[in-house]
Image (cartoon, rainbow, N blue to C red; front, side, top):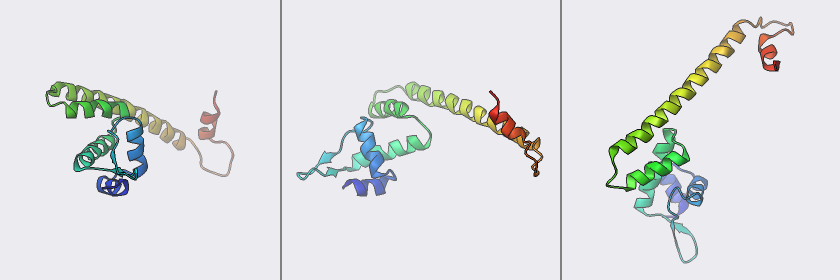
Length: 129
């Protein structure tokens, strides 16, 4: 299977597949005599794993760790759980930051008259040093 077919089968663009290979996240695909990449079913399985992990917001570094754990049949599930729970903490921190930003913008918007006058607390807040 060529890279275009692998991309279609996994939902990961050919550009991202090449990127994942270049950073060592996935093993480089085999090559034909003409130099074209060829992908096996195992390669596709790995790419789908990566797509799902990325969809859950894991970073490249975390995906490296998860892939290593996935391949290690003697792994401790506690190691996998640790990675997942660390990621949950990061997601919750980011969610709290986003909520704080939304609350601030709502407050500013409530205090903006929204009329033809130039005074606007939103602009005033953005220009503050």
